Length: 477
Image (cartoon, rainbow, N blue to C red):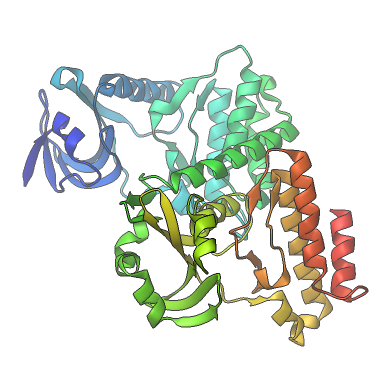
């Protein structure tokens, strides 16, 4: 088994050795069997065996190691003092002249991260079923934290473990005392940040669970409408942030660039997709063509039993190449837009990877890989007798109206909102995102928004049931 000093973990990158024995200056060396979280050069969280028992060890490295470990210890002590559920601390120390530090806590093998227990993901916050009990339990725990004058500043589902019908608070370094000044505003902001990471159809039950605990404290009578406003603001911020993360190497995405190409892919997907990412044209030659046009070629490919769509954004001619040379590729634009829309609760096939061909700063063709959506576009649906049933038409119109409501809330336009870019398989998915725009100016957004409505309405004759229902739904929304 490899043996390593804590401070040497700072140079271990994203894949530190495992199994590994960690040398501690003043305690028995724990043997790490698996790394659970890695923040390269800063923090390493592992499942270890120490003194004959399983433990969780957090190792902090770098110039801020002692400060981060002290914050973790202080957070655990605050939680234990107020009788909030959190793993018991077993030991802590600083090593290597302050360049490394560790905190060890009890480990619960049967516990699951809340995101896993609740079926949550970073994006894709629409179409999920009813709110699970695990999330309601976590919301009640958050209310108890607020009642005790504490909050997690960077609150998110993976900061909780669901264990035996209870939620344990982890990542205690983020647990802070709520200042008396503007305490209610801070609690409102914190609760809104929590809601922003959950599907909107869960907000009402989550707030009910929260209020069943928080409302017992006279100082915490929240204005839940303000909480919702905060949630909307935080969700917009999260969508922008995920779009930025999708373009840099981080824990979620594997990104690398050379003078001739730029590749971004979900880190968890990279190994499986590596052959496609290395030779996308070869993958396109072997796939089933769905569309072969001048501006784009689209194909369906099967990878290990999984259906994926690969779209190549072509360069039509010399003048088209000149216009695109210094602009981000349409693949890049669609890649970022897909992540942002899904985070805002707007369904679109999940983006999996993006490739951009380059010659130094000059852009060429782009490739976008997404999950396959089996639905039919709305023009095809119009030719299907079953799709002409009133119940189906009403369901489609209701989903379209919901999309437009989210467009209004977040100042978004699609840019080519025609019926062939809307797929229906019981839910509505939007495709062709290379003209999607996110506006800061309400005036500019409004003009483009009305163009989207007009573009969609023109797909059906005036007076047709679909167009009439669509007009009525948009007026009501």
